[in-house]
Amino acid sequence: MTEPSSATTLLESLEARARTAPAMEAIRFEGRSMTFGRLWRDIDGVASTLIERGLEPGDRVVLVFPNGLDFFAAFFGVQRAGGVAVPIFPDSGFERVTDIASHCGAAAVMTSALLPEDKRNRIAGLGAATGLTVLSPADCSATPTTADLPVPDPRQLAYLQYTSGSTGNPKGVELTHGDLVTNIHQMISGFEITDDDVFVSWLPVSHDMGLILMTLTPLLLAARMVLMPTSVGSIRRWMTAIAEHRGTFTAAPDFAYRIALRTAPKTGALDLGCLRVALNAAEPVRAGTVTAFESRFGLDPTIVPAYGLAEATVGVAGRRPGAPIKIDGRGLVSVGKPFPGVELEIHGDGGLVERGGIGEIVVRSPAATSGYFRNPEATAELLDAEGGIRTGDMGYLDDDGELTIVGRKKSIIIQAGRTIAPQEIEETVDELDFVRRSAAVGIDRGGPEGEQAWVFVELRPADEARPERHPEMVVEVVRAIRNRLGRRPGRVYLLGARTIPTTHNGKVRHLNLRDEYLAGTLRADGRIVYPEH
Amino acid sequence: MKIDSDEIVELVRIQLGAGDVQREDRFQEDLDAESADLLNIVAAAEDRWGIIIGEEELVELTTVNDLLQLVRRRAGNP
Image (cartoon, rainbow over all chains, first blue to last red; front, side):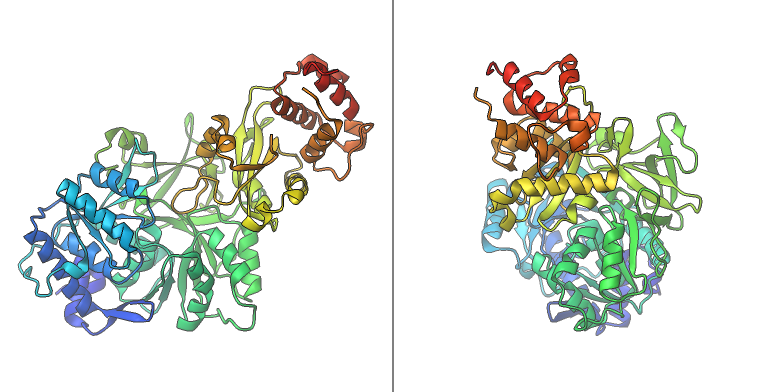
């Protein structure tokens, strides 16, 4: 009989857990909990219903679910039926749902009872119009008939992680059952995770870090998992939830820690001493955030910078828990050593660069994707001849073999021969109190000044409504950058709230922003609030 | 096109992140502007008023007032 945590697929582990510990809590969400026994019955219910409706092995099923208990029955139910789960960010526009459903040739779409009714109705309408099966876990059989279903082979596709990309170039990362378990074990080792850990997460289950690290990992280990809805309100309640559930492991991008710092109840009321790992990944880790967070809550080193990408399943590298952060001469934070089994290479134009040199990060991992689903061109760009992932991220390996991310391959700014990582500027600007988010891009308008750092500053709504202060805000931005870099930026624009293009997990899309500026759409759309000309 | 001197002064001020700027101020000595800053000021003025200022004209730029005169000339607005 398989030991649950030594299973080669998550399904195998969940089945064993349902058999050996059916009454054990698997997931807690908003005060409700689901046991392993109940989870497995629901998984079987979804699987048998999908098969009744004609699902064939390898068929794709799009999942439109906010965080909630019913997501897991759907995600694993599809796999249990031999299908491939395709979770989509539930706030995605309807067009994105239809684009992805069509790109992956979905056989069915599953929705959650927790989705807003108008969204569910539109998706049901899509089913009626196209003949696509649309159902939710609540529609599925309570008396499943799947006892003799084969257990999927670890080499079979389990799910597609669509990453943000243009409509014309959809990128669904192919991940197998084996990739998931392999990467989970890499992260367990790197972050020293045990079944004593208590996971607290509001990250979306529709995306890699929220799904694989924050829910599939505790499910494999049967560690406690407290899931919250994904909303700004949850970010405010996040720290309180960690204190209340004595959470030991959480994860979020840097901006969430910055928000948490501003919104958490004042010190004294909140004891976060339980926290062992507060993972900081998916966007540049800022030394200022780490220091402010740990000192604000009186913590020993707790924030753990890490690096990953969907093409490597999720996790690639991480700092050792409990170690203080390591900051280089540029102020950039190390994201640690690669996980066991992962190799990192730094490539320049002429091949491998020497230790310490900056270049594109190439990842070799047994959990690396085989490519993008039905997109051979993008796959050929992604993978080198040996299956290594060209990440498009720039970084270097230091003398200890630790990785530091310097920026994206193409968003690096070169101003008068000096290489500037956009995040160095953004980090500085975002500390100003009127700034919601900023983005620095290299723009060469063809003048004698050459490429310069142009800074786009998204204001908080209250500050957007105070035009008389806008000139002073620009002055402050220029001064802050000069204080940090010793140079002034080429140009500063103040933008209205929510106008900087970002990916689903909050990374600034520098190239899109630059293109939108150069095409004149930023101005034409009224997104630039200052200067007015 | 009428070019208001206050607008030029304000453009210089926000480009440099300066507290107060006068028309008589010299870019280098009074405003602590480097050559790259001056180029960026000229670029911003070009974009603002849709004009082109030749590189050779930059050498005559010592004060904010010089910039005002240059921009007005280029904009056909002496």
